[in-house]
Length: 71
Image (cartoon, rainbow, N blue to C red; front, side):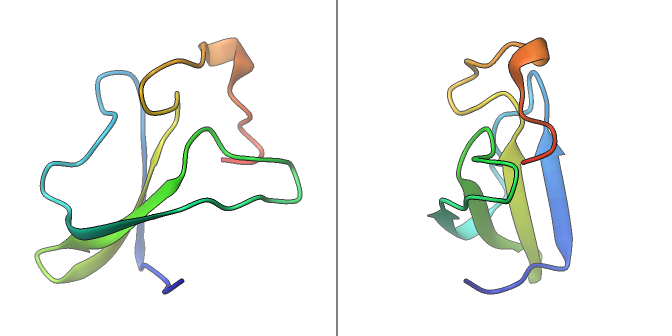
């Protein structure tokens, strides 16, 4: 997986980035467990971007259940 200089964690109402092109998703386990959703890697205006849907995709994780440390 390549690195992205910009990381975005979306919240309620911000579950995906329509502007993200050449998007690929990657499932990553951290030392704190699994994040809320796969990391989506792509580009916006030529810049590398990593996006995470904080509440899952689709939105399914309540705020008190989000694994913030893994995210």
